[in-house]
Length: 80
Image 1 (cartoon, one colour):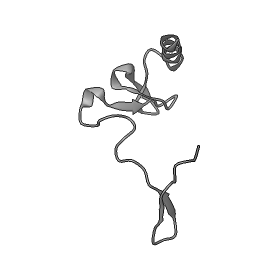
Image 2 (cartoon, one colour):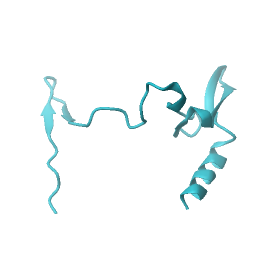
Image 3 (cartoon, helix red, strand yellow):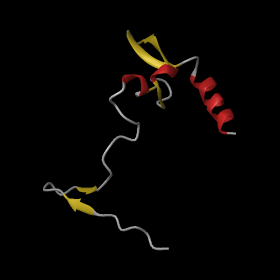
Image 4 (spheres, one colour):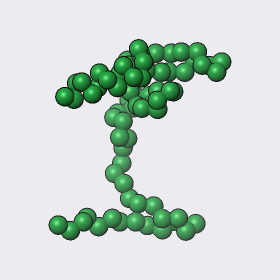
């Protein structure tokens, strides 16, 4: 099997960028209810419904609800 050829272009400042498909890997940003955010503690992207606001460092940060560990275990069990 041959690898697909990666097309690159060199910018005027000399940096090389790989071409990539348009869009976000996290789904559509138009619908607020289906948007994702990253958990402040574990950094994983989750649907907003899976996050809760928690006061950390003097600001409200969004973290996994009920906890990062419980959500990770639930995902693992759902996958089989």
